[in-house]
Length: 112
Ligand code: AMP
Ligand code: ZN
Image 1 (cartoon, protein in one colour):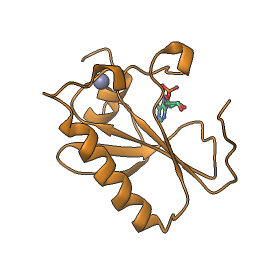
Image 2 (tube, protein in one colour):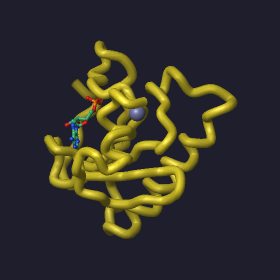
Image 3 (cartoon, protein in one colour):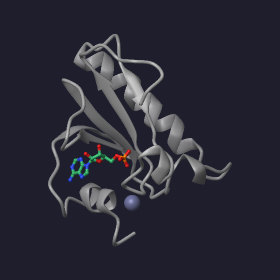
Image 4 (cartoon, protein in one colour):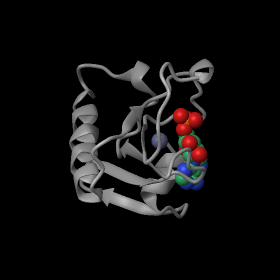
């Protein structure tokens, strides 16, 4: 997807602060952190959102969560929140599937 911000970040055309990378996943720190630790985990395959997951592409979700488990262990994070906004009303602004990982402060529930 040539006009997708996160595809451009994966390609290295837009700089990012990398946290982790493997053959199917890229993770990088959020440019506007909402917690002391806030990074995004994205599949390298362009998928628009959680609403676009199908039997054909759902393996990318497992890969993202494997990465989340690995990264949080490496960073020593035991308490964290994983969020994926789907659609503008839910707060999605970048239409490439991503999981926010937030940690380092008290979290409220329900989220605002
Ligand atoms: P969402 O609003 O759930 O779609 O999340 C998109 C996230 O991408 C926001 O938290 C933004 O702060 C973040 N973001 C936007 N541009 C960049 C960028 N160039 N590098 C890192 N994070 C970004
Ligand atoms: Zn994309």
